[in-house]
Length: 193
Length: 431
Image (cartoon, rainbow over all chains, first blue to last red; front, side, top):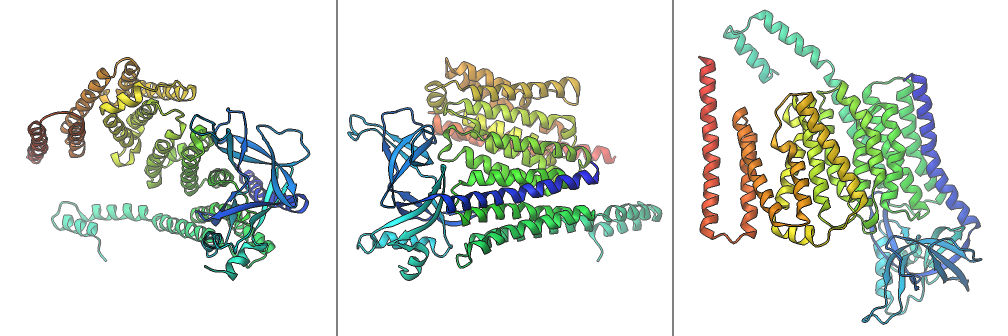
């Protein structure tokens, strides 16, 4: 291969390498700017990623929906439609495909279909994970964040834990996590367990 | 400082085995060979340095500096990437030495990872580890060909394997097949071929001879979709392909330690056969819940055809060696597997016999070639077979004990006999 072609190929690749993260930044910024903000009630637990650092996994209250469809498989995409209830997110409906509805939606992942059986009297419902269940935190704050919520939940000092999520056209960005309306980062600094 | 080699040469000279002229010729030969050595060493250290710096940057950024504003963090995300690209561009434009290219390539590889990672961190982008690894590796594979870099072949293969495992064996992945892994490996193969062709004796080539089959062995399990025993068949077929690649003239005429295909193929075959020599495997998995899956069947057929073609090539076309039993184990196992759907006793007994024959076969090859390694490998196969039968047969303890004693004696006897034979041969040569 001639040197000039190699150089051109490298320049194209370098641009793609810059474009991918830049495009990620741009699409997230668009959602933050133009998307509607919802508060999702949640509970944090702390795992970590070998390359991207510590994060807290968020277990949302919105995590299951009654269904009569028994063909759901683990790992299926779930279109979760959300409506606004005084700023907080409320589950509207779920679907396998995109449907015409005037509420916002996000695409979650089916985790488990809990069937009604002889022993399980609860109606059949689908459990799912919402896509914005990772909140990256400083490595010294992720574990305390989990501990502070776990230890204080019982003594009722913690009234509300929620994630502030911007949603636009099915894309969501988790902006911050709040404990009693204070950002979790500040709350951990103020109340180290 | 005088090396051992120089001392030996001096000894040969003193004893008039070689003359002064030969010594000079030997020295000139080694001096010319050593000329490129410092450069190669510099490349290795350069790559290690760049890799460590790259990984260090990823770790430092993973700390999550939440005192920095979002815009500063975004600048930090792109800085290592741009620096890496600058160095790669510089070494390309200025046509720098190989060490420059390899080191800057390794740094850019990790810079791409750190850049995507930090952006994900800033915006809490939910993608799991596998999608992150996939984007990262795909963005770096073209660099392999632009830079013609060996380090990048290594890094891309390792990260592709990591992706394959994470995607294929994860919690959500019962129905996920890592096709992207396969694509990434295929895109790396031309560079690997180039390496085999032009730099056959390089250490890095022999690392690749181990790394490529090892990676495929690790990830093949992710291509199975059912829990039936079909996975065993797929693995035996893959090991059959590897063993027969190892038998190709090109690989077979190299040192054994450079021939990862032959060793992985042989060891893998024996281990899989040992696992399937247990009765419960045939009772539980093979008979009760066989589910036909087209994807598994297609992969099995592809592997079977490749292994058969390789057997044909090694025995008929290249004619470099006789057909060994190891080469056709995959075929025997495939036959037994099809029988197993009706009757599990016949395949079970035949697999035990097959292992025994393989062991004896290896001992014979070892004895014929005066190769202690192969001889003891054969003995080990037989020992492993006996140890396995220790667990699931109702043999009396006395009989089991006697079996162990006889194998132990066999170890001593065969090694001793071969040693004697070797001594005799050496004596006759020296006479």
